[in-house]
Structure formats: C-alpha cells, structure tokens
Amino acid sequence: CCGISHAYVIFGATGNLAANKLLPALYQLHCMGHMAEDVEILGCGRTPFTQETWQIEVRKQFVESGIAEDASLDSFIQRLDYLSGSLKEAAFYQSLGDWIGNDGECANNVVFYLSVSPELYVTVTEGLAAAQLLEESHGWRRMVIEKPFGHDLESARELQHSLSDQLKEEQIYRIDHYVGKEAVQNLLVLRFANLILEPLWNRYHIDHIQITHAETVGVDGRASYYDNSGGAVRDMIQSHLLQVMALLAMEPPVSMEAEALRNEKVKVLQSIRPVNLEQLATHAIRGQYAAGEVKGVAVPGYLQEEGVAAGSHTESYAAMKLYIDNWRWKDVPFYLRTGKRLQERRSMVAVRFKQPPMQLFQGSGIYQPHPNWLLIGIQPEDAVRMEISAKVPGLEMHTRQIVMDASVSTPGERKAEAYEELLLDVIKGDRSLFLRYDEVKAAWTVVDPVMQRWAEDEQLPLQYPAGGWGPKAAEKIFGDSDRGWRHSL
Ligand code: BG6
Image (cartoon, rainbow, N blue to C red; front, side, top):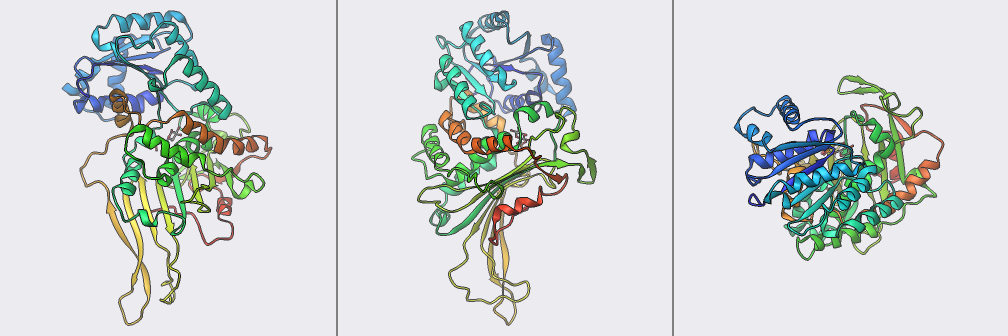
C-alpha cells in the first residue's frame, strides 16, 4: 500500500479526534513506511490556520504527547496543509477542488474523513458532490464516516438515503474504531483459527456472556456532543458493544472477505430479540454518575460537568440483557454494559460455561464447584484466561479453580492502534472492518425502543457514585439467577 498515491482530507482537523487519534495514526503509518512519498494531508476547519501555523500547531501537540522531534516528525509535518473555511459554503468546496486539482497525480485518490459533528455529514457530502469532488473519473474518492451513524433508526435511514444519492456504497466507509482494535480482531482468530472452542460455543455449553467496556474518564471535554448526541447506549452500545457481540456470536464466515464477514455479523444483529419493554427495569438499566472519587481524585457528578444541560437525563452508564433468537444462541443471555467514571478502565468479554451435569466432587469451605470461565481482555490487558477446576493437593478430593493464563502480545511487541489499521484499510479499499448499512440499521432497531422509552421517562437515570461499578440496581439484570458482573479478568 505504500506505493498508492493519495490525499487525506480531514474535515474537523482541529477537533479532539483528529488531534488524539487520526493524526497520530497517520504519523505511525508514515513512520512504518506505509505512505507513498507524495501523500498529503489536508486539514479543514473553521479555525483560520495557514499551512505554516497548522504545521506548528500539530508539531506542538505531537511533542507534548511525547513524540520525538526527529527527521521522521519533520518529514511528516511537511505532508500537512490546511484549508480554512465554512463547510456550509460553496466557495469552500471550490477552493478544495482547486487544491485537489492543482496537486497533481497523487490527489486523484482522495480519502475524505468526516470528523465533524454528525449534523454536518450531509452538508459536507452535498458540498463535495456539487463541486464534483466525489466523481471517480481519474482515481478513487472514499468517504469515512464516524459514528454515530444517525441518532436513531429514523435519522440513520435519512442519512443513508442522502448519502446514497451522492455516493456509491463502495465509496462509504462507516468506521467503528472498536472493530479495529487488535484484541477485537483477535476474537475472530480465537474462534476461527482454533478448533477447541467451536464445539462448546453454543447454547448447550454456554451459560451466558458478558461484554464490558468500563472507563474511568467522564465526559472528558466533550460534554456538548455527549449530552446531546451521546449517552451510553448511543455512544457505545449501538456501535461498539453490539459489534463485539456480533463477532462473538456469528457463524463462521466463508472467507475473511468483507461481504462474507458482514453477512454473518448482520444475521446476528437481525436475530436479536426485541428488548422486553414490559419489564424494562430488569432488561435495560441506565445510570448517571454523581460526584465521587476515581483513583483517589475527587470528581464532579455528570450534572455538574461544564456543558451538560441542567437536569439532563443523558445516561453515562447502561447495561442491557439481550438474546439472540437463532439455533446456536436461543435463550443464552448476553449482558452488555458500559459506563464512564467507573472504578477501572477495562474492556473484556467473560464467557461462563454451564456446570457439568453431575457434581462428583464435594466442595467444602471455599472449595466449591465452580463453572468454567473464558475471559478475554480487550484493554488494557489483552490476555486470554481460562478458569478450570483442579484438585487441591492433599488427602481429600477437594477442587479449586486454577487459571490458565496467556498474554496475547509478548513484552516489547508494539500493538497497532485501531485507527492505524483502519486508515490503512481505507487506502487498500478493504471494507471488512467497516460497517455495512444493514448492520447499522439492525443495531438501531435493537436500541431504539429502549431509548424511546427512556426519553419518555421523567425520572433521572439511577445515580451512582463516580469511582464504583455503576448503579447497584444493575445487578437486577441477572434476576434471581446465580450470575453477577465480572469486573476483572
Ligand atoms: C468512542 C466514544 O467511540 O469510544 C467514547 O465516543 C469512548 O465516549 C471511546 O470513550 C472508547 O474507546 P477507547 O478506544 O478510547 O477505549
């Protein structure tokens, strides 16, 4: 791919995502030799930078984040250019057209990255189309669209409708950075490069599956986005966690090719049983953090965060119990949860197997028979752990749990950041890790009724102190079973 000439045009180049993820990822691709000599990166935004002042700004950000000031950084900075203007005005797209047109061969292939507020997705697409910048007469034009794709089912439909007026499906890259994480891709390898899991991977052997994404950060300077367009369900469950669930539950694909993978994922999403709205309190739980202490530091509650509307009902925590009505998974609960300002930053999958049909060994004291667990760390650890029973040394036949433990990466091995992988895939034209519209639609179909019900609810989400594991009532999701949340590997 290092031979492919292209240009990146980043809309929203001065925003958080560009600074924290996109530009650092492009820098890594540059350092690893994945960028042709003539690749250029054009930042677009309202801030009136010039090429020179933007280069200075990016260099400053990089150095502050610990990147060494060396020849690699110098040559990367040389790739940067900047175009300021209003995305709502035709004149801007004319200037962009001049930049692309004047920039020789390389810019015939262009990635347009929409790292702007979702209300602008259609504006930018229509602006580009009107200036004929989406036409692929001399090279390719690809559009990367950040989540959320719409803010509910209806708006996702409208967005898709507007985009498909201007773009062919092959030009659209709906990004879900979670799917680009090494440990998330490893779910596919664990399942389909090994034979030992497959015979057990079904309703006959699995009791339930938990998918957790816990964060210690709060709204983190993004309150205006999060409070209006976010909330834990929209921000994390509709996209990232349902994708993880689809990868865990899908049937083996016929190949790793994009359509083959997405065909299997979408079947899972379409088979999710509608959430039981009659008993919503035990199927979907929402919470909002109150003031508390995270890792010894006092932090304000959600409602006190700057930029959050007074009395906001936006949830910073959500847990859901979902079922997949198909042959493999019928009646196996999948528990998904995510929250901000929790005790630890940890994402993991926990699979609990059923108990053996007979207990031959009696437990005593702490030595009780335990079910097997398969624990898969996504971050910060990328470990794979299996908890199994073994005999306690001694004269009695007592059992206890031991752990078979493996770290996926070896010390010193560099893990690729999700955005590095995904940005490279866009250049290669590989859409296997990007979402197809039918997946997005199926995911909205799952969460939409719950969000609507919550929107009608006059009560605030359950308050939970920052620094804990979310609202106590989140345990209600397990009913009277012997299940409970696993917080650690
Ligand atoms: C983003 C959400 O998509 O994912 C954020 O908008 C969240 O709210 C983030 O913090 C989590 O992803 P990661 O990769 O930072 O763990």
